[in-house]
Image (cartoon, rainbow, N blue to C red; front, side):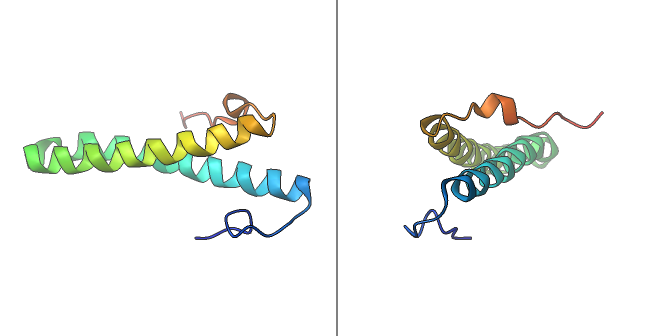
Length: 86
């Protein structure tokens, strides 16, 4: 999914912040989900574990990339961190 920020479109700064925050939250949730898949793949063997680990690492890299962009805008990503469901 390409956002207006990624396409280089000039938008209102508050809209840009909101889009980036939403993208970060999606990436954060995706990374958490992918790390959970590593445990699910554990009983399927080493190749499944390796694939799940690589996928989780890519998701974490995307999340961290969005976190850096937020920090540049003066938003602390740790303040946006979603709490795991109890």
